[in-house]
Length: 240
Length: 134
Image (cartoon, rainbow over all chains, first blue to last red; front, side, top):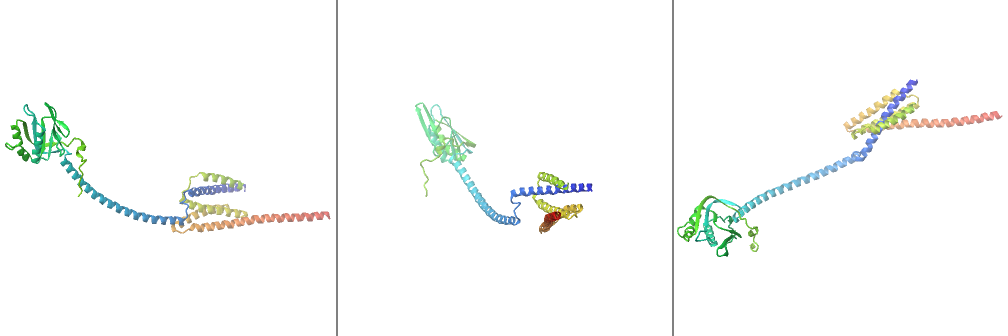
């Protein structure tokens, strides 16, 4: 009888351990899920939240589609802009080429003027030569690597009787003067070497040293002077 | 001795319950229904012991089988989308109240019986005193 009671007590104790352990575990679960809130919310509340989320999802999806359309529009615009900017780039390049902001190369002539014992080369000679070249259709001209622009000056600066130099693009240049010109070789050479009235003939008669050579590939450097010489300060565009 | 076993069991159980890792929330519903079933068994056992027909085998089988059955039914209910656990809660809690009522009545009657007995004894003593005086 005594033994029987003991086993009963032990078994009931074990049962108590199990029951109370499980109960406390559950208490803890409930306590912790209280903090998170959403997990302890009632099913109806969750359903409400779910439906509201669904409507919001639909709204957001609509917005997304709208925004995507807008993005596509912008993309198209951007593409057209890119085309426009490419055109502008091309134009800019052309203009730079024309103005003299880039290095250029092509067929042309190289004329070398040298001072000799009797005659010295003056700015007027160079001006005359350049005018002749322009008449013959030269597309780019440089004197001693000074690019000739429409605003380039070619003037004599006299320091004293025995000492003078030529100013081109506000830079002093001294002989020999190497004039490079890009253009149609035959036009340029024939224009310069006309019998009697041509530049070379008339100047050699005057006793000055002029040499001309035809080159397949003449390289003329870009304008390297002060940048603001390429800017117009007083001349304004007239709007039509 | 049994009371001592219960107290020790409760203390050890509480300590274990505080220290085991938390159960995921999805399973806590099953655990809750198992606890209700087990508590129902415990109250049933107290009632039967008051009635002097306590059987350890019946108590143990009821304790575990009811709990497992309740969990299984809850699981089935979740699969069928029917809240079967509500039926289990109603049955178990109803039986718990029933058993609690029986326990309450037993003790109330016991106290009332004691009072009546005391009164009867007093009256008897009075009668005896009177008898001795006369």
